[in-house]
Structures are given as C-alpha cells and as structure tokens.
Length: 320
Image (cartoon, rainbow, N blue to C red; front, side, top):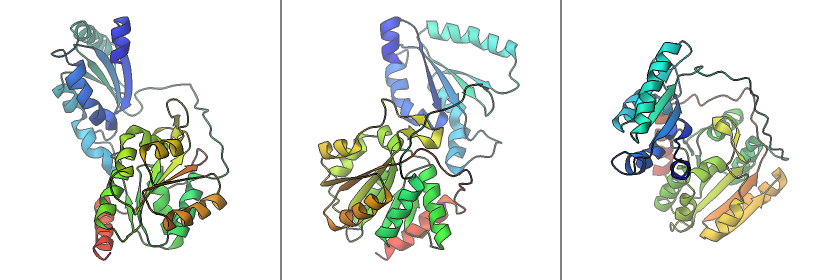
C-alpha cells in the first residue's frame, strides 16, 4: 500500500479482518503516520467479536478494542452496517477526504452483513487426501506424542477426530487466534520437554503469515520437534482465498532454512510412512502435506474452553 502511494500519489485500500490489526500496528504508526512519511491509506476492516454479537473466544477482546485501537493510531473511523444511511456515509467521506489530503489514514469498520455481493467464490484445489484425513493419519502413527495445531479448521478437525475415537484432549494444544504462531508454541514446548516428540500441525496460510518462524524453528535447538505444514494453497479458515503467489514449495523452503530432515506426502499411504520415518530421525523435521481444499459441512467446534484445553495439556506435560 505504501509502495502504491509512492508510485502513484494515490492512497491504496487495504482490506483485512480485525484480527490482522496487530500485524498492521507497526507499519501504521512507524511508516504511514503523518509524523513520519505521511502516507495515507484507506482500511476496510471486518469486525469480528463486535460487542453484543456472539463470536468465538479469540475474537471477543479484539472486537472490544477494534475501534479504540484504530482511533488511538490516529485513524478516523466509521462503522458500516446493514442500516447505515447514505447521509452518514457522505458526511464521513468528506472527513475522510480531508484526512487523506493531510497524509492521514482512515478506516471503515464493517459489521457482519454490512456488505453484500453477487460474486461467487470458485477457487478449488484437488488432491487425493483431505486435511482431516491427513490429521487422522498423523494421530494414528504418532501415538501419545504432544500436538500443537494451528488456528481454524485444523484445530477443529483435531478435536473432532479425538472425539470420534473416544480419545482425550490432554495431548493437544488447539491454538485459537494468534494465526501463524503455532510453530513457535510447539518449539517452546519441545525445548522444555526434550524426551517427548512435539508435533506442530500447521497450515500453509498460517506459515506464510510468519514465515520467519520456519527459520527460528529450524535453528531453535530442538531436535524433537516435527513441523507439519498442510498445503492446500489457500487461507481456508478465513474464507478459502488462494495464497498470494500460488501454492508455495515448503519442502524447498525447509531445506533452505535448515530443517534437519524434510519429507513430503500427497496420499494417506505416503503420509503414514513419512510419519514413522519422521519419528525415527533427528529433528527439527518438516513434513509438507499436499491436501485438497475443503472441509465437512458439519464440522463442529471444540466443546472445551481455551483455558480447559490449556490446563489439560499442562497436566500432561507435567508428567512428561
């Protein structure tokens, strides 16, 4: 967005969910701010966790502080919902134009249902194996190891797989929120529990968000950590949009940044073999799993709270 303005002299529009504000804070206050470069930008922010609207736990606090956080960073804000009138938008557009002329940014905060569209989403990735099938294979072969799963549908599928088998959840940390950080949680556990294999079941979109985490994990000193990246070429948990630039070659990235051993798998049969091999070699290990885009329509959500999940895992780790 800043580069677009430098090249054209016109403000760019950035669309994000409010969960992404944390990643945007530094460039907003140290790059765009009118006391630094004065680069104006228009933000359109989807409002998860709006006060008074039921949402998942990881969105509640972010939703409460969304408007205040943006205003504290100097952005003029307007909330748009289903019933927002034309007079309201016209008045704010006048304010916004003045802000932008002064090198300041503005934000439109969009309530659920605030926008409508006739466009349909047709992006597809076909592969012999679904993510849920891959998770089942890993849990089958890894036994009583420790698992950290990334946010979104991955953690939901880990939970439901355990439930369907009548297994407990004490070996699993189901990361909600903090997208892109599951691998660092796994690394922290692995460094403290050297006698346990610690798995991170990650997603390609999450891994791309904080790609430097791969280097940190590869060189972090934990030989007992196994990093699985399920690659379906998309940010499925936040709408199924394709990854920028297309599906990445995470195996090649893993070799380049220093994982001790790197494997790939594209079918259940291959994955079962790879999981056994990964447990037998020295880590850090990276496994790239190619999977289809999509999840069950009836996929549920964890019935335990995040704190219950935390406590159950900590009890397990205390005994290891």
